[in-house]
Image (spheres, protein in one colour):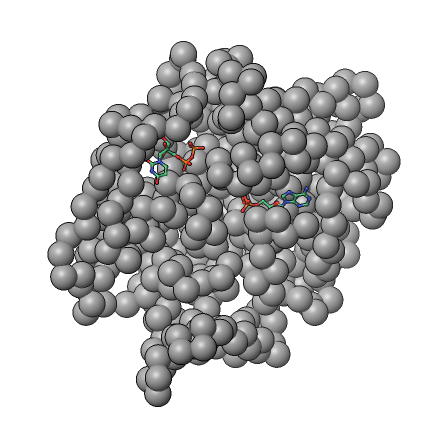
Length: 407
Ligand code: NAD
Ligand code: UDP
């Protein structure tokens, strides 16, 4: 059943650096495991398995008319009542995206005032729609390549497409977002004296010659390849961040995020986790690029959110890797996803008639061959390490309704 939880993990977050970020997994799950219905003729089936709730939102997909109906339930999820002195005004750029929406959920539940800035290029209003209208929440459609004025205490700067097909779709725009967008948000941090955290990426290491990747490795990036708009964009964004720190005293934090997955991933963003899960669910061939011996390490999104909040509130100003250290070859990963999805489908009483095949497709240009974070710095300076392994993440069952979910 979709309401089962990943074993043993009851709470996420930490009470550290004067910032209590602990939230029960059940509360978070109630936000993304919303009831989702599919209407097929006269029959209506709850495909998420999530029970009806008295808050949040639900959707019904009607097969015959290919239409979707959203229903917003009037009550908001309960949030912590913080004293004024502890309540922070927090800006999350890219807050309607995959990672951003989970960060927003956490910060809202903790009782802070949250403003989301997003141009909805790859994000969706539906990811945070359960907060729209809440007195602590504001959503602004805005492109970060243009300046933005607001009074805030903390800025989480996430705005930037993250999947290779999305960031390569308009390479020049990705570069503008990385450079101009980061410059504007750093300018805002300088004016308001807000603390600024940027979500950089393991891509700054390129196709690495050192393994695992430590933060002091300078990387191996092809500056004119198809991935360069993102890799070099994030590299210059980091350069800019430390420029503002040294020249203007801006209080900065830099997270280098490794591959992350979880609920509200855009199911069609072309990244490996969403591709494999969707293909396995639909009974289509799973597409491994190249021979599948390239490696990645996958973290579950709640671990990432824990790491971002710890980094923001701690004292470490150097870049910090945030990722899971368990390394998979892509072919191993395809097999693992196929096994888990099959197991879940069997338990739900709708096994596929036959196993899906794993097929090989051409390897994309400049695809990094090995990637695994060295997370010693995160452990030593933040006390952070991931709690979830891939199986626990995938078994969180968030994907059972991805096929129809428009998020
Ligand atoms: P995402 O594409 O789901 O979210 C990005 C959000 O930024 C979207 O809501 C999008 O609409 C918004 N956005 C893009 N350009 C914008 C602009 N010019 N102005 C305003 N909003 C804009 O991606 P994600 O996976 O949630 O990634 C979030 C951040 O984390 C990104 O900065 C990404 O580089 C970084 N990151 C993510 C991963 C990962 O595995 N998810 C890995 C490394 C780094
Ligand atoms: N990949 C794959 N099949 C897919 C999508 C991706 O084999 O359908 C591979 C891709 O070539 C890369 C890895 O999976 O080696 C991770 O790709 P993703 O796009 O998720 O992120 P990246 O880490 O490359 O930014």
